[in-house]
Image (tube, rainbow, N blue to C red; front, side):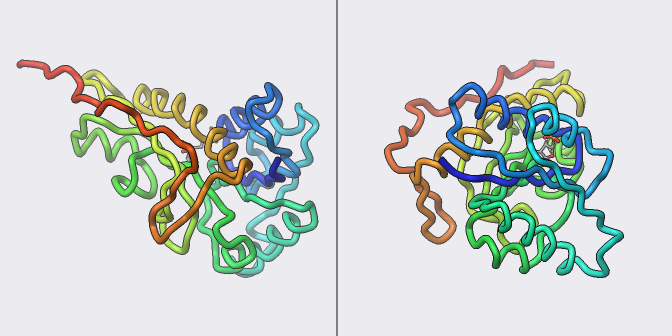
Length: 217
Ligand code: GRF
């Protein structure tokens, strides 16, 4: 069992997948608090509906990123949070939070990192013409979407894909692997050595993934 705090800014579908996994017993975690930097984030409604405490920390109330993070850190520590889960939290984290939770902050990103960090990720993947994309759960370090990778999931990119259709396919995988990553953490099975993350007793997939069907024009 691990005590988690979830940081959000938006719709909160990943938060929902975590709540659902806790409620159906596949994730052994307790969501102590959901913190948002946006008062109108739909994620807050999702949390309230399940009786989870919510707190809004407004960026404009703090003169610096460090002071904002210090407040978030205080709220998390006060509630006994052991793992910080970023779920669509649209802010960079400063050293204040990183040092408060060393290797205890994770994020999900909708690409196969290190490809396409940052924003407008699905557009970048389509524009580049990759045949596969996916999502990545990783530890947060000082960089942009750059910390050690815990789990990735791959999805094909189809010829007819739009930003929305690709986003939807990736999001379905996000909802599968984010609760899984938290569960691995909760079971104490994650070990970080340099950039590499090893999962005790994990089984690597047997088969390599193949290129999607080639269209002959
Ligand atoms: C997800 O695509 C996640 O990978 C990214 O932000 C989005 C959040 O979506 N970091 P939601 O708020 O969980 O629906």
